[in-house]
Length: 119
Image 1 (spheres, rainbow, N blue to C red):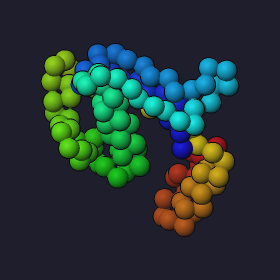
Image 2 (tube, rainbow, N blue to C red):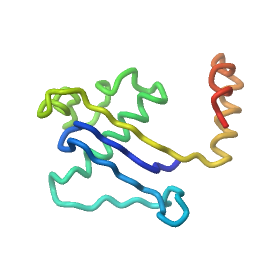
Image 3 (cartoon, rainbow, N blue to C red):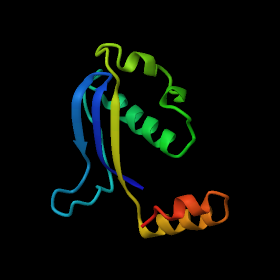
């Protein structure tokens, strides 16, 4: 799985920010993403947002507030804004990853619900 795009609204230091990790020529996710910046510029915030969205989407977390990350407190993430945070994540899966996911869910009780949504 590769991250293509991350859109944050009222998440920690970002009032509204989109991060596009796609190659501008092909539109495909880059093979390598490097986050560079000064202390406090938001590098960890980007990683925390990705972890919170993926953890919730994969049911490893029942809510982003369960994210265990040293120094991360979701209740403080939107405290400066006073309004709810929003994070959207766009990802890209290889054919092999999709097939592996299908095989996994065919073996579980969730097979009917999940495999209908896979391409």
